Each structure stands twice: as C-alpha cells, then as structure tokens.
Length: 130
Image 1 (cartoon, rainbow, N blue to C red):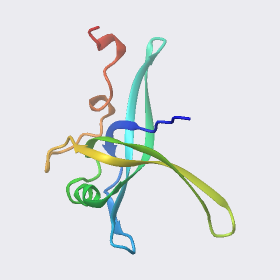
Image 2 (image 1 turned 135 degrees about the vertical axis):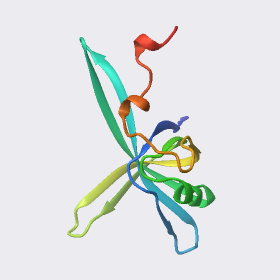
Image 3 (image 1 turned 30 degrees about the vertical axis):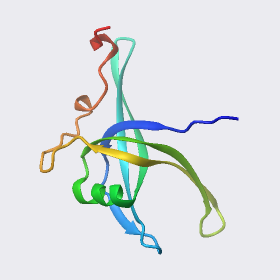
Image 4 (image 1 turned 45 degrees about the vertical axis):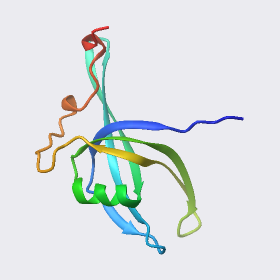
C-alpha cells in the first residue's frame, strides 16, 4: 500500500529557535510556527491561527538557530511525525510535529517583523483573480 507524507507551511516563528545536539553530535533545532488563516463567515471576517511545532536537523537546523528569531517569516517543506512517550508518573503523552527538511527564510536579516496576521495570511477568495 502506497503512502505519502509531505507538508508545506508558511508562517511566523512564535519563539526563537532552540539549538541542541544529540549524543552523537547531530544538530537539531526546534521552534514554534504560527500559520494564520483569514476567512469570511457570513458578512464577518474571521482569523484563525494554527500553532505547529517544528524540528529541523543538521546544518539546516544550525542555520535556523543562527539566522531566525521570534517573528521571522519562513516557508518550509517537511513531513508529519507522531511521537509518543511516557511522562513522569506514568502518563502517556503524544505530539504531532513537522520535521522540516527545507526552510526558506522570507524575512531579511535585521528586518523588523510585523506580527499582524493581515500581512502573513493567504489572500481572501475575493482577491484571487481567477
């Protein structure tokens, strides 16, 4: 049976990337991403935000930690990864994250970033020319 797991996201970092290294020396960066969606419900415009945990490995992760910060706009490509573990006290925990293999930096270094969802959301259906 065939399967396919690919994710494309564009959004703003919700926190500075955290860089760490595994015991074998592999770099891994993690950060949160906010993906905004604006839609019309009746006569009213609504904003919806999806928060996603992102993990980036190797040199790409080191670059993210060096050049990105909270508010940076990125476009990334990756795959969904589902993790389960047992917390202290025996509670079972789970988490769905995106493991990115390609991160494009859309904010120039040193550029001030607006966290206004209107500047990062997709165009409204009325604005699409086709």
